[in-house]
Image (tube, rainbow, N blue to C red; front, side):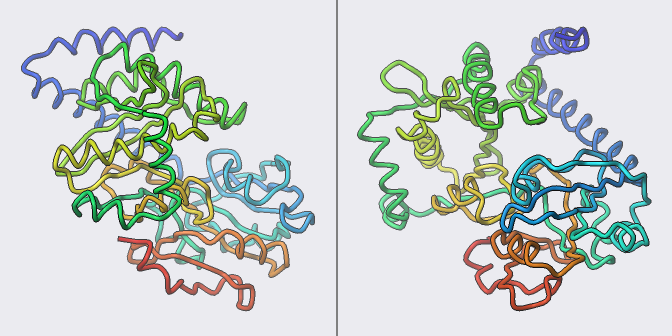
Length: 374
């Protein structure tokens, strides 16, 4: 553990003694948001000039070699790589480029790439649209409306979701909501970290340290734990604001995916709904997921009835810009198999789908968008 982490732990312990409780929560919330805004401001400034990379690999759908020209101050994004390439691509840095030039300069023409991909803060959206790129967020929030009575709400769920709920009841799971710091530490070490490790392996990911969870705890976040008898099996951190429940970090005991098959994740969704209904809330924000509509997490949240909606709590402000350079079969298959939620010039969400018959850069909106978006 680095000395800076010890220092932060000490400062949190010192200021956690502040009273009254409302002032303490306001203080930690102010610190949290101050550093969030400061971090974003620094990121926006650093993105005035973006690194330029070329990523080369074997296409996942056709088995052909493809090249992507990537503009961004991180390495090639992991989940786009998983969708596009069979294995980890070979990534080489070419130089730097001003943000207002990305996607429409001679670097693109000379790279002989199949696709241009840009990653930057949404502050620079106008430059992406000006270069005629598809723009889509790194993550979207999924919101569930729970204002209907219990019986009517559950009656309208899909058969698959009803089967998940039956599984929760068959295993006789229960839940508790706690603010105990030791329970939070258990969740972080035994559920969250191990779940992330088992899901993503050694892939480079940002994993918040425990001090971050301690700050959330001081702000007023709570922990919902599901259990079998007296043994905890899964958990999620959440807080409530303006009749909405915001669930954020998710974990399974020991990262055990067999527990998911036995309904551990379904129990979190079900009991979140039960607790929110009991506390007379109107909506549940089930947190962020990738904007690709066929993504497993996206589909799982959707089957519970959640829909896409912009959220003030979504702190992920980064977006992608995408443009197809070579109208090739691998690029067609990539877009056909991976419809995604995009951003229009007015910053509203829209679903983009492709059937392979049109120009790959023709921005046609799906007529299903109203069924998926709030």
